Length: 326
Length: 214
Image (cartoon, rainbow over all chains, first blue to last red; front, side, top):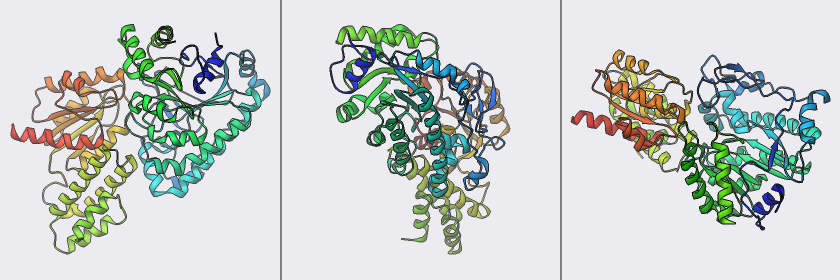
C-alpha cells in the first residue's frame, strides 16, 4: 500500500495510485503561525490587520467584509498609498515555536507540511475597496491597480519568506476566489494582465525554495483560467466546482495540473444533510472524473464542513469508492 | 451612424466619460428625452444578454450601468413624469442573516437600467422591512429577494411567504442567489427566478408585463 504522499504523487503524475486521494488527507496545514490573521467568531464584528471590518452573523456559515461608506478602507484607489498599510510579518523565534513544533511533528514521508495563505491578491483588492469598485478600477484606474497589486504581491513574498524560513513547507495551500458558480469575475484577458505575472512570481519563489506542491483554492467557475493556472505553477486546483465540467478539464489538462473537488459543497453540506445524499454525489464525481489527475473533495476551502459530520461522511464514501474502483 | 445610435453603442461599451456629452448633443439636436432613454434601455438589454451568454464579465456590465446612469442624469430634467422610471418601483434586498451584496447590487443596477425605480434595502433585511417598503413606496411592481447561502434559504422562504400572505397586492416577487434554483423558487411561492443579473432584468420586465395583463 502506498503512503498518503506516494499515492498523491502517483495520482497527479499519472502513475499507479492504489486508491483515491481522500480530500485533504495529504496536506498537514500549519495554521498556528504568528503572522496574524484576525477573524471574527460567530456573532462578532472585528477590524482585521489591514483595517478591514469583517462581520460573522450568528447562525451563518462565515464572515464577510463590511463595505458600507463608513467601513470601506480604500474609497479612492488613487490614494491607495495613504490608506493601505501592510501588517508586519516579522515575529520572533519564540513566537514561531508552536508552528515550528507542529511542522516538526509531521512525518514528511507521509504528508506534506503545508503553509497556508489567504486571502489572495484578487480577494484583497475587493476586501479593501468593495467588489464593484475593484472591478471597475481594473478598467478605470489600471495603473493604480497595478501599483496596489505590486504592493500586495510584495507583502505575499515577505510572508512567503517567513513561512519558508521557519516551516520549510512541502506544500502551499493558497486561497483566492476568481469567480462565481458559472463565470469568472473578470475576463481571461484581464486576468492575464493583472494576475498571471504576479502569481507566477509568488509561486516560483515558493518552488525555488523547496516547496514541491502548489495547491490553489478557488471554489467557483474558472475553467477558462486553467491554462493560466498551469503557467502560474499551480499543481492542484482545489475547489473545482462541477460547473467547470471537471471530466473535460481532466481530459484536456491532466498531466499538467490536477483537479480537487467536483463534489459541490452546496449540494451535500446543508442543515438537513443525509449520508445517502453525500454517497450519491461522491459516487457520481468519482465515476465521472476517474482515478488520475483527480482528488475527490468537497469544494470548501479546508478540511471541514459547515455542518457537523459531512466532511467525515464524504471521506467514508470516498473510501467505499476506492474499494469499488481500484 | 446616427448620434442616437452612438449613444447606444457608447452605453454598451461603458464609456462614462463620453455618454453625458453625447446625450446632451442628441437633446440639442431635438430628439425627445424619452426616445434617448429608450435607446439606452435597449443598450442595457444587449449588455444583459451578453453577460448571460458569457461574452462579457462583471466589470463591463458595471461600466455600462455607470455610463447609462451618467446619461440619465443629463436626461432627468427633460423627462416628463417622475425620473427615468417607466416600469414601476422595485424593492430589492438580501434576506435576513445574509451579508452578500455583490450579486444583489448587480441585479439592482441592471433592473434600474431597464427602467425600474429601484429601492435597495441592502443586506441582512428582515421580512418585515420588505413589507414596510412595499407599503411605504409608490407604484411597487416588483420585490427582488436574494439569498446566497444554504443557511439563508429558509429566510428567503419566510420572506416570500410573508409577502404573499400580506394584504398587499399589485407586485410580483422574484428571487435568486447561488443555491437557489427555479424549482426552489416555485416551491416557496415566488413568481420568478433568475440565475444572473442579465436575465434578472429580462425576467423582471416579463413579470411586470404579466401584472399589466392580469
